[in-house]
Image (tube, rainbow, N blue to C red; front, side, top):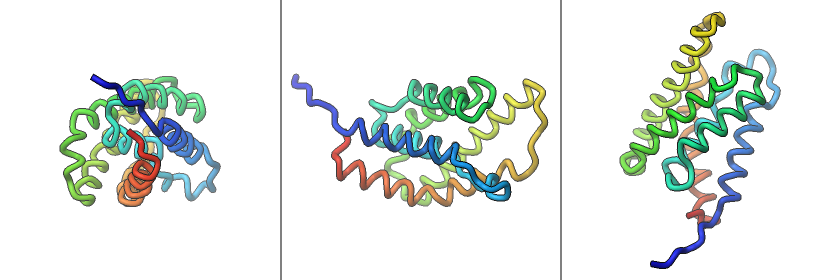
Length: 162
């Protein structure tokens, strides 16, 4: 049995860092409700494309980092992202076979699940329930999924991420 070295860890790390940057990037008040869940989209892609490298641990760690950077309850995003990574890991072989529009629908379900978990945590700690605008970001993320998928797929191929 020969072990081949894994390549492209830097590309995965850079994509996650870029997603974190886009998450904390200041936006005007009117545009904040349209900010997609960048980190979740990147996590879904890499958990599908390279499930042996990106899984529940990466989801949990990136969730903790997001909680610290955004000032939310510690563990709120970690819970949601680790569950999203787990579900994506379980269905990654089927998800890879779907056409892009079916992938987008699956991504919508995962993004909505993340929002439901965040809403549940907010309710559990007594935070006010957000309005209907809370649900716009998953729709924006679903519309962006084909482009995110194509960009990250092309980067993965170009740098031969294994």
